Image (cartoon, rainbow, N blue to C red; front, side):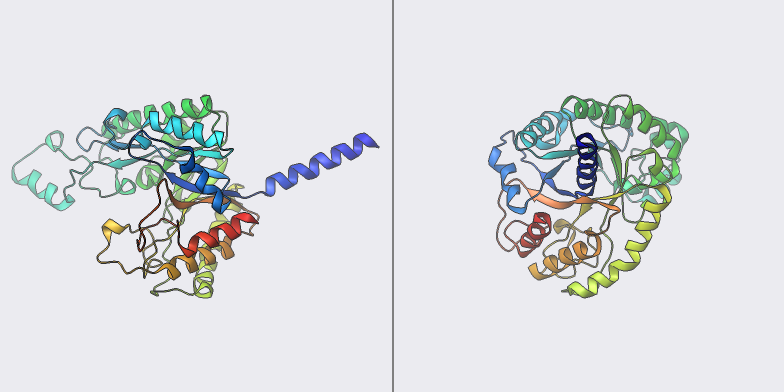
Length: 357
């Protein structure tokens, strides 16, 4: 009888563990190599148990290769900085999602201008300096030839596998193989399946891909991963200050679509990024940053209401494994800011309430 009781208790405990949500925050670390324990300990105030650490590499538009790590001016996005932040997080008893991603370098040129210029002066494609053709965001980048896809994919594979090695060495809890690579992920699924197989030969933990909100339904390789990941910057309200109920109602259709994908591939969903700026109309274009806005109006209520509606829509769903709020910044923020940070704002109390449960 005793052995049966132990087995039943263990099964029950395992079921409870599986029901635990990932209560995470994306952690944006310091630019300089000065990392203090208090920077991560401060996250305890919202009861977050997970931290997403995000190294970043830059894609050279001319070569379609990723620029070497030592050229990154932000220490916390380099391998050295990321290594230290993982260690600090582990020492603080936080679980870690390692989420390397890429940005495009600043030498942008509009597609139309490039095409016109190339034909006017009879440039061959090899001589064009911007082989991303003016893509403004990583999800818009698509190579125009098989040769260029191979060049990019080779460089990207090296980048991801190097972080897979780090994730394995430091016992990272969840590894993300890509973020918002829409055109690549949709057009080149065989490459991503190959990359997943290579990652699994190095990293033994669960892996995920972080799709943009307008991309996840087109991804065909979810079955190869342990979770479905999506960044939830869906347009959710046209109001300056959305009410909780209005935003919640607007989530219903989106939630239904997400659930359909989860059911189709038999994978739980992790919201790899969710969050809002403390600004009016933040629910209209949630992906917009401060530096992309014209004279944003401070609106802490809008941010808090949208967080509340998000949790009401998703946090009790069994097929949602949890998520990572965007974002927690290593330093205290100036009062009256309109960025994504939640420190010192009403949204912080909303997060703490749901993460405490």
